[in-house]
Each structure stands twice: as structure tokens, then as C-alpha cells.
Image (cartoon, rainbow, N blue to C red):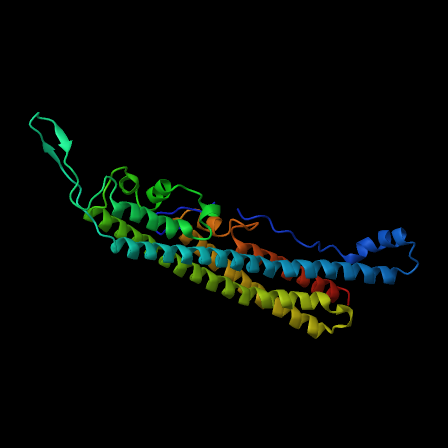
Amino acid sequence: MCVAVTRVRMRGTSHGVGRISTEPVELGVESLCRAAACDHPDVAVGIAVLGLTAVFVVLAGAVLSRLDGARESLAREATRTRAERDAFEQLRRRVANLEPSERTQPMPTGGGTNVLTVPAEGATVDGGGLADARQAYRETVMATAHYDEEYNETLATNVAEEFSPPVASALVESGGTLTPSLRTTLTSSARHASEERAELLSKLETEWSSIDAAESTLEPAVDASKRVVDRDLSRASYTDIVAEYERLEWHEGRVESLLSDRQTRIHDEEGDRRHWFDYLYRSLASPYPVLSAGARTLSLIDDATSALASAAGGR
């Protein structure tokens, strides 16, 4: 199931972050003119600037899309975890309402050998209560919408993973009985599994809040960088250029602080649960979407800062 707190069953290195070239746009103008038989280099410069801006916009959008992807992964995990939490709670209630029966004990015979006595009145070769417990498991835990896709396990295998191999053996035992002890074990195990999912849901909510907090830092930084690239800096005053530079520097400090805090959190989380983020974000290009988005944001800030430096140096 999902990720248990004490028994982790995972369902199923940050990648490098590209950078926009900061080489002066003019370097490509001459070749661009030759290719287009251009007699007006200023037109080519404009085209090149537009191209750089277009690339910048695409990469800026990719920053926030990484966080959107993280939220989608968390939402999917929360939906499945919630379904499992409820399924185990339903199982607990159903098993608690079943009537247990004592297992008949072997008694010595006159011949000195032990044989099972005839089951007590109301008992069967395979106790009805035990069959009902198996049916309850199939109709709750194994009936979750994602079960076949995620696990596709037999009842015995899943019970062994969720509860324990001895409990699984007792539940599927041919001729077995739903004893009071087994019923108690099943209900307590189901309660524990449900509580594990509830704790996981809390952790998923915390991670969701962390993604939102990261976006509140990264989105303004991306917007500030994009605004610089979109501006015609040739018309900007030196004062404006300095103000933009200081603004970017402030955003850069916030992003760096965010990444430092996030790295500390990753270290702490994976110290308790190895591969935790690999598990959460297994469908993404990187298991560390905030670090990836943050690194890309710093790259965009760097490119915008370079544009300001070029504009200031050309005066």
C-alpha cells in the first residue's frame, strides 16, 4: 500500500539544469544576416533578441511547471492514501462485527493418537467467520480503485505485506477458524494500517504546503527576471538599471535561502525514510522539483543580470 510510516512499501539525482546562453546576441547577427541575405543588421538584431526572449519565456514557464507537476504527484498520492486509509478502517469495522469461534482442540483417543474432535456446534470445516473475514478484505482493501494497477497481489501476499506472514497464513488456512485471538489481531492490524495512512496524509499535506511556499518565492523571482529580459534596456536610465539589478539581487538571496532550507529538509526526511522523494516524485524528471525549479530560477536571474550588465556597460 502507499507508504507506511513504520513499514514502507514504495509504489514503484536531480537532473542537470540547462542555462540560457549569455553570449551577446550580436555574435549571431552576422551569420543570421548572411543566411537571410539581410542588408539591415538592426533588423537581425531585433529578430535575435526576440528569439532569446522567446527561449527565456519557455524556460521561465518550465520553472513553475515543475512545481505544478509536484502538486499533481502529491494529489494522486493523497487520493490513493485516503482510499487505503478508509478501506482499512472499513475492514476493521467489518471484522469486529464477525462472530469468532474457538478452534477445536485435539484430544487423545483410546489408541493413544491425537485426532481433531468434531467441530463444536455452529462451526464448519472452514469457519464461516474466517471466510467472511477474507471476503471483507477483498471488498475493502483489494477493492480500492488503484489496487490492480498498483499491486495486483493475491490476498495472501497482500495480507503478509500489510499485516504479517503469520496473519496471512491464519487468514487463508484451509479448515481454519476465526478465533477471538485472530479477530483481535486482524482488527488491530487494520487499525494500525489505517493510522499509518492518516499519518502519511499529514506528511503529504506538509509537503504540499512546502511546494506552495516555494512557489511564493520562485514565481516573483521569475517574473522579475522576465521583466528585465522583456524591457528595451537601451532606453532604460542608469538609475533604472541599478534598481533592477538590486531587485534581482534581493530575489536571488531569497531563492538561495529557499534552496538551503530545502536541502536541509531533504537530508532530514531521507535520514528517516530513504528514497522518500524518489517515491513521492517518481513520475517527474527529478525527484527534487523544488531544487530543480530553484536552480533554474537562479539561472534566469543570472541571465537577466547579465543583460543589465551589458546594457550598463554599453553606455
